[in-house]
Image (cartoon, rainbow, N blue to C red; front, side, top):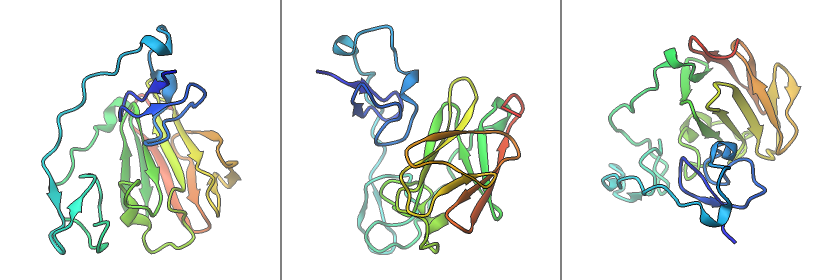
Length: 193
């Protein structure tokens, strides 16, 4: 039996999953009006050019990686296009470094460069899990965080988010990953206050 195809990364998920198992995208945004058996996946996005690590020459499996998965050296590249926060998109500000989350969309926070596009941000924090938490914005502009069964917890304004569960995010919230990695939540105009 066919499952739900993620609108962001095209991964097939089971019908009972609410978030994509690969990218964390909210699956409720998928076309629910058609039975799962006859949903057709959207055309595959155009493949980006192959990326190689400038330090060791290894193939980089995901062009969004910030570090090489072989030698763990930082990857240099053109700055990625940033989502304009005037449309209600979410930004997490970690000690002067920002992580932008597009609307709709999600970002996995953690130390695993194979899954988290912002893994370099957490590389020196051994208490952050490899797949710690997913942060996203739905089509309605509402922000959320989901703890991915992390070892040391995810907290919104010092309130723990139970493993596997989702909590709402609003402008000005403090998102804490483990014991010492803190971000301030910012929304552009039109986002939740």
